[in-house]
Image (cartoon, rainbow over all chains, first blue to last red; front, side):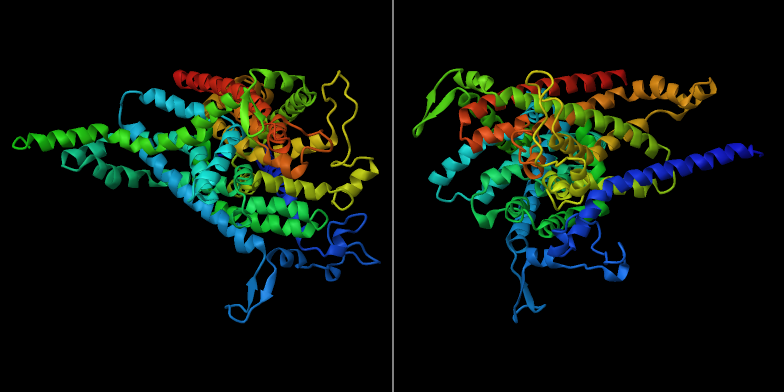
Length: 313
Length: 308
């Protein structure tokens, strides 16, 4: 049982080196986010200082003094704009457009697109996985080829379509059209991924249900779908995050201020607050935080859909 | 069932047509949102706006587009962006994946932290990087200004080779860094997943035969993960060519036209100058390049599957 001591030493040093390198890489990864957080808590006077400082903690004598830090929440205040209101639970109301309108819109768009995409993708993914029919391979290849059309290419037509609909359809709603367009953008790759998930589930389970007298639809909903649920959840999450983070489609299709999603609102902020960096930083963090938290809790599910999607498409 | 053959036939027919009904909604959505627009773009590329209607102009749009000075310039910017972005991301991704593969304690934590940039929207990532170099007030602006660099306002240096925009402007280099920061986690994950499929015994036996680390990397690791690297490469090219959000929030195409990549140029042609015909011509060219790339990816993945 005697392992040479030098070998053990070498292993220990290697582990230390790898750890050190990974810590450095992690620091690089979070550095921009970290600076955004510090910027968001600065006062206007510290933002416009020349030369710029990392921490607003300097005194005339020392360059860094914990007790002298001038942290402020001005940036957040200007984004969420709380107004006192007797009638609400907390005694104030959030009147910032971002909190009041844009983020609820984003949640609505992301949620409905994710539900729709995972539902449609699971139905067609199931059909593509379980049935052989005329044009099966041609359709699959066609759906794959569609992913090759750049998003902004389609926007030319969809933009004109939106204009025509707005003029001619009395019940037209920017929001419905936007969600429909998101369906179309995120379905093709989701169909491919769900087909892969269904392929991994043994057919025998379903077949025995069919022999026992279950209808094909019954077998699908009672047997196969529950087994594929983890995969479908990852499709849901992937679409949710993609729609949450999407900018250009909404930017080109949404015309009413009330219907703007958060990314569009953020872009407006950029043009209005070119100097007020703390406001921009606070807005960025408020929009990104929910997604980062969601990611931290569900990262395994995420990785699954993303890797699957990349290898397939 | 034998007593009632018609109901059996009915059930049989429903069963036969079931896949059709399951697929139908998906196909309708894709036809409207993806296929129709593609054909519309082809039609639009041959038209020009005349008053309230469109007029057929043949290939004039393509001609004018190619003769516009911004077109070759944007191609140059796109090529430079893609080369920088792809080379940086692939090489850094490979190195980080090698580190993660060692599976030191805390690897799970490192992976989680490393992946945060990837979940952040491109428009937010662009904005976050913009905050660092905003003229005068950005955290790095002071340090860079001492060296005479202002990322967001310096126009590009005079090109060395004709009109090819090389050397790139500071804004372009910064854009490449920001895009790499965001794409790196995903590529690292891809490479890591592929590294983990290499059987340990292969590397071990090579080591016993006296191969050193570099030889193992060159002769065993890289050939074995090459297909994944190719998939990652095409993913990067497609994403880099079509992504436009980061240009929007980080540089807005500027300073001047220094970060006009093709997708941003397309946006400006269409919605900035309202020349939809010409934008459609450009969109068509980008789409064709995309299709060629995707076809190549398919070839590579098919080859990979056949080898297994």
